[in-house]
Length: 120
Image (cartoon, rainbow, N blue to C red):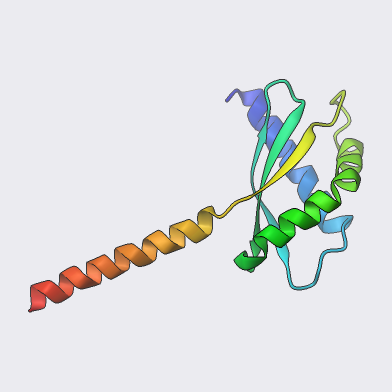
């Protein structure tokens, strides 16, 4: 990924975070986080990986953002002036943190079983 692409990803992530926090009326029991942004090289599309707290609300958060995509894109275009067109946004649920937690639990369990076997 080029330096320009990294800068653009960061710029979109920052602007998108502002739009989500300031322009949308989020439900009080959900906190939406942008896990990753991936803008296509031609700048026509952008994958936005979303996670939520609590994690079981991630799919709800993605649906909420999809439902408000028009407003989000409009507000994003106001904040990022130097792009000719605002990329088409695709919101994707990100469960990386949950998977990492599950793997950590498995590792802890296996380590505990090994310790128990050594003590026997």
